[in-house]
Length: 152
Image (cartoon, rainbow, N blue to C red; front, side, top):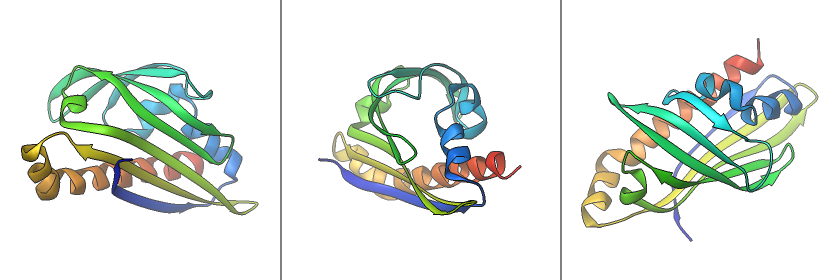
């Protein structure tokens, strides 16, 4: 099992169904994840895949992920199947998770976690120096975007 590398959470003033609708809609993924240019596939059924055209630090590439855990209005867990940007060569046993908790009729807690293991010694050093922090910043931006989209 891989190690928790980054964890962020937010309270969203919207029903859990509204938050769930955003995190399972392939058509708004580019508004949620700042690295996604375009996306196709499904995000609403376990075992399905999504393929995203990504941009990261000026580099473009393709990433395909599989939805490995799916519990309606509770959680989604994704893993990288393949990518052209080298992420799967740098990290292994990766999981990217959303967990939702209903706090009230119009209040939802959302937690975003990233699990992975650095693939080699150099990546382990990079992870300690910058990757974990960068992953946390991206997660926070994703949560801010979800909050903005659902609280409109």
